[in-house]
Length: 311
Image (cartoon, rainbow, N blue to C red; front, side):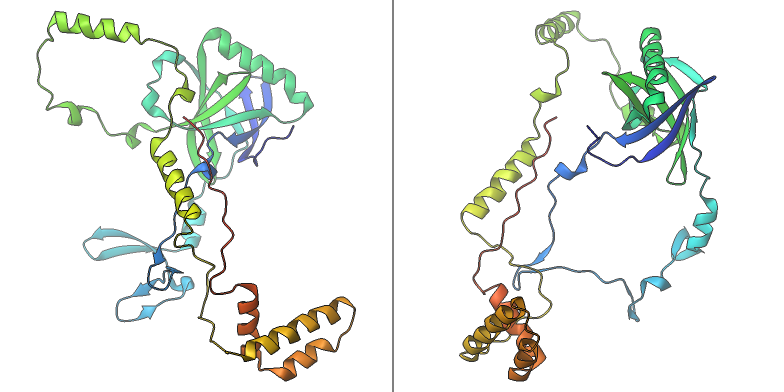
């Protein structure tokens, strides 16, 4: 069965003379996260944003460049071409240049995980060889990988029946812990208290099972959303540019005309459209069509609430 996602990188993992063609797939699924839009409560319309300049107003996106603030209110400007020139050529090879015992790498350095799958039948055997060798030696392969024009440290490790490639933070990306823990008082803990805490830890010691942990906030959000839907709360029908004008009794005759036009069009008649255009101005027809498609108090179709995977 094909993976339920598109690969983010295609290339080779190399162990000396062993070349392993692979495809990397993100192990993270952001689709399960519940997201919201900002709505203007009085009009029930979605908030949209414009890029504006004080004293000028809205500006075109082609006039926008990136700026680095060197002093308060002073910027060095960069064009998109300058950023493109800085991008590192995408290397299609991840050379494992070092192997470190798995327990010597602090977990704080690990960033984003990717599933590595063999690319083609000929890759199956070298894939198993690399996976099994890493597992038997208890080591993690380290190298560098280029994705989206940037270079990352990459850790190659066995995971379940396959291989996991995980990006690793550079040293300068992490804040030193010392500055955060300086205020913790020094001194030895009471031995009896440590013994008691140790006993409590042993009683609850068990292998890690992420299924035992649930995202309580996301679950509460899901319940709230479902409750609003069941109570037919403030549902937004659809995004509208302008409110539809009220044409009173004239709507009925125009609706009939639209229905006749649709029936004739399905039968292959080309003259119905001209008849409708003579009955009413274009703006009026469009407004009526909107009323036919979505009456003022009609229920909006409710999208199912995305469930977040349990952690």
